[in-house]
Length: 351
Ligand code: SAM
Ligand code: DTB
Ligand code: SF4
Picture (spheres, rainbow, N blue to C red):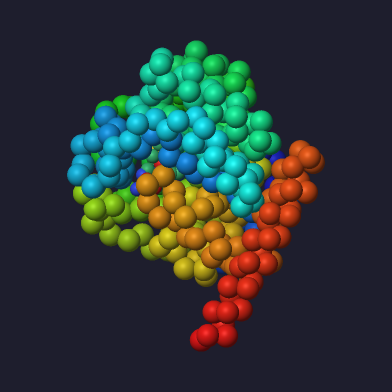
């Protein structure tokens, strides 16, 4: 099957998606790379930084999540971060080369009293010249409009898995709730960041189902995070068996083929991937990462290590089109690369 056609579709059939998963690995990666090159510079990766603006004590029961109040994961519950503190973190993220600042809250949905704080955060981060993203749980149409009016560029809300497997992972809200929030985000004019998690014990059929849901949305999400489950002690999925790494790469490649113009983000789970696996994910069409030592509550590779990997692969962080920040950004990135190269030099010299 040759899928390298230069068109965006939202009428994918389950059997077509299954056929892509069934391709020999090399054929699948070759197709994904062809399609990737029609839409993106294959040597650029978008870099986002995450900040947990409200950590822990979430009332939901998502089986993978260290922040659910229902599981004892040893996480300290925290109040909503002060706006200034968030802006300080955003400044640091910008200085280290991130172009998007993503703020996450362990909420089922934001309360009315929270909205003034989160909208101030959006305005402050935008003023620094960075793109903004938030993930705050379910949103009503009014809340989505409020965030959009404040200047929020992206809203992250994942489908997480297939509709069929969903009930084995979350019982406190249904698939349709998620679709409704995504509709509200779209109608309010924001860009959608929506993906899922693999490695939760789902079947390949569920990975097909998840990608089918995403690819058949009226408009593809602009950003598609593919998370590999981070197994956290105390959560019901702590002892989940590892997913075959090639099945993870296949999922990235099929996402790239189905949603050719979207950024596919190699999201949570990179700490458990070696450099070769990450390089394969980039070859399969992943072109965005979370950058910085921490995701929301779990570790992520050190920024320096990522810059070393980029440098070894000849990858450059994607810069934003807004030119007034580009030079600053390039300078920051160049500094990071020099630093990373020095570290590598001393490491090599000492070993
Ligand atoms: N509470 C909000 C919500 O659930 O929409 C926002 C924050 S929540 C932590 C954002 C996403 O992080 C989840 O939808 C899930 O896809 C991802 N996530 C959470 N825990 C994870 C884990 N242990 N491994 C991989 N991804 C995870
Ligand atoms: C997404 O898809 N992955 C990010 C982000 N959206 C908010 C979150 C990953 C969280 C991993 C577990 C943690 O650090 O708590
Ligand atoms: Fe709460 Fe979001 Fe974690 Fe679910 S994924 S428990 S909603 S923080």
